[in-house]
Image (cartoon, rainbow, N blue to C red):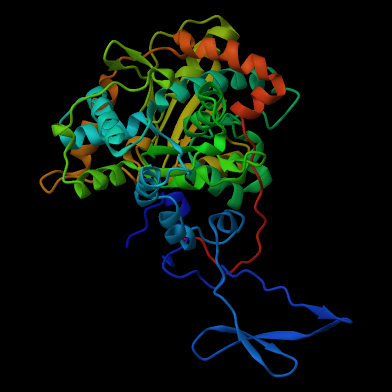
Length: 476
């Protein structure tokens, strides 16, 4: 089985997803009696662990269960968690919940599916549909399985863009007082975040935007506002996100996105675009044959029958929207069109705002591991000229995520990606500040919970993972 996570997380060539590596071992706490151990642990010839008591008796110990949280808190490899991830967050889990809803009269859950625009575009390219048509047919498919509500994370991305805009302007205005305020690095890519926490820690974390990703913004909306409107507890909702990459499973599993009081995650399960295709195939269905149905209006940005998107690249348009907003707010400049300058490769491009020969704003996007490495090294040497960088782990960004559908036998990767990009850009863009429904929620919901709670719902935090071993050597 090939690794499915982004290249940023594939730090070694161990590829040990079937059995945890020797680095992934939970220590066993021995009982003590008057300062002496009353038992010891030994490894048998067959590799099993046994507890040897003082009287010579042996007790076979259960295999240590390494959870995803253990792996996220470990400075070793991520690949050891892949089998756990795929078991805990998979389309089989979604189907299990739906089956349980049909067979159990007491343990009913409200099942919500939030679909990303990148996943819609990938499925649209495969089935020969438009992205909006794919969204409607996916709604029909999921509701036919027993899903109660289907939303569009393009809606929650509006929150992410608005918060990113405000965060950048605030950082820019305080850059003289805080040396780590700029450049602001985007935080929507969980592969990049996991790599930053484990590899560069306190050096890089202050630069990273605290704004939640669209997936986790939707987590706040679904387990917060939506739960209130439906009159159910967050624990009664099973929230599934359809995403273009496997790294999003890592993000959903972070302890920062666990509601301790309600004892539930904001996003219970993440499945990829490819897993949705697998679900269709297992049912012997094709999206082309499904009758379309409208997405639920509560968390979907639509104009008539068409879903609305955002201008900019296929990774969410963060650079585009933050740049145009900052140019206007900070310098009174209206930017109608951005001009990108390609540097060493197409995955590292920059945009500048100049006036009278002076560079007022310098933005860039850095996609893929090598470009991220170059960016970090420039920061460490104090050579980075940028105020803002849109960072994504996958080459070509989210539309090329590892969880997207694979090319057909007669199709190249390049041709497929070009088709996905075309379909993604066909959706009519809307400026974040023009979305009246989002503006209403800012007023009715976020203002009602107070400033501190609103920040908790829209932002997050990062954690340095200390090195516990040098047993794994990174290879580029």
